Length: 215
Image (tube, rainbow, N blue to C red; front, top):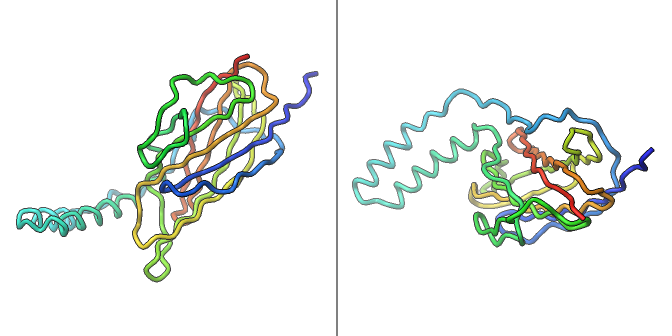
């Protein structure tokens, strides 16, 4: 019988190009999960009516009041964001730490050497905010699961990292930067699933990235 795989996990995250959170190293107990490709985001509510904001933006733009027009469009975008499902707009392996939202260097291969870290960049949309006075707070929790390509779950951990931010604006340009470092993996094909739970907006979503370990 093959001995169990020992997989410590190092995870570092950045949000709004902030400094990474403190790295964590954990040995975790395997759990089983159905091998569906991507966990779907929950269905959203009825469509959002942004006609009033659109009219205000159009009138302001026509009158040359550019900042007012942008503010109206921003309010419309926020209304959509708060009611839409939590969504991963893009997720990819990267060659180095991203420098900001959209400022990243995609990795040209999904094959990794044994023990080589996996750097992941993901853009998030639809997160919620909790308001405290004039401060808007986000509250995100990340889980992960590592599976073989055939769906066999190897290791999983809930809440391996949390992200809490505070801002005087409802920032929408969120990106996640995660470093996974798995030891004890044999050569083969794998899938790492990252689940994002938004406690402020009461939403969640997940994304899968497939990779290979080579000698």
